Amino acid sequence: MSDDPTTAYPTPPQPEQEQPVPGLANQMDPKPDHGEDSYTGSGQLTGKVAVVTGADSGIGRAAAIAFAREGADVVLSYLPAEQSDADEVVALVEAAGRRAVTVPGDLSTREGNVELVERAVAELGRIDVLTIVAGHQQAVEDLADLSDEQFDETYRTNVYGLFWLVKAALPHLQPGASVITTSSVQAYQPSPTLVDYAGTKAAINAISKALAQQLAPKGVRVNVVAPGPFWTPLQVSGGQPTEALPDFGAETPLGRAGQPAELASTYVYLASDRSSYTTGATVSVTGGMPTP
Ligand code: NAD
Ligand code: MG
Image (tube, rainbow, N blue to C red; front, side):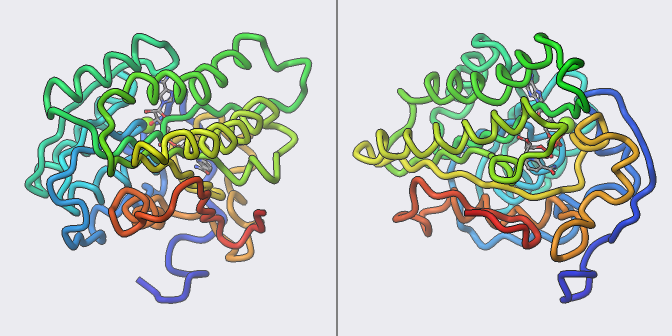
């Protein structure tokens, strides 16, 4: 791997491709790099219990692999349709010598979120790191074609799901716990095709900063990661118009899409006690796209 960030990973053009929602990492070309062969731990999360949503693929998978290699047991949340991707992550977590608890389910419902917390606590006893990465994104060119159903699903998954999950987890979060949410550069530079999605990502920023202040006296930190364009199943299953995929990432100053592996250390940092004075922050990892 090159040290030069402009060439360290694949550069555009990417091959055109399309998958049905939610998309599988194991069907992508090129396959995303989630740190499978590169992430090395150094005991930063030894003995912690981490819940990761969207853990089967993309950014969530990179976080789950890194957390396990840093010494955490990991509860993996994903959709039932993603079992084949999730199986790969289970094997990687177990190869790191940690426990993997799988909880396939739908986080766009209150019940799905409550069940995730109940299973995590029943199996592993507590939650030290609550990592909310799951998200829904579908590009729509014309507002007239943006259905009520899609608008609803995007908000239920990205915003209501966050609310339901943190609320259910709260009684189990002890002082020292860390909550990490996932916003986007879309919160600051919304694409014309992502009206619903961009709004949810701005909401995640604001909700997280309000919660950070509310939970600080309890010793619970809340921080946000705001990625730029990353090469993941979300983007090849309707997150971008198909014809935009070859150039995906070319608009960034670094000239390429990020790989999930390039976010792993950001999630680890916010999860670990090393960031003990960091709360209410948004860490942008955008390939140089400016953010506030
Ligand atoms: P991804 O497709 O690998 O991950 C998204 C995950 O969300 C899926 O794997 C799925 O498990 C989960 N999910 C979706 N709907 C769900 C539901 N109803 N119930 C349970 N789980 C559900 O793609 P990714 O790009 O790694 O996305 C992870 C997060 O990163 C999302 O919140 C996304 O908005 C955010 N993000 C991605 C990019 C990017 O360019 N890829 C940029 C900014 C932010
Ligand atoms: Mg997935």
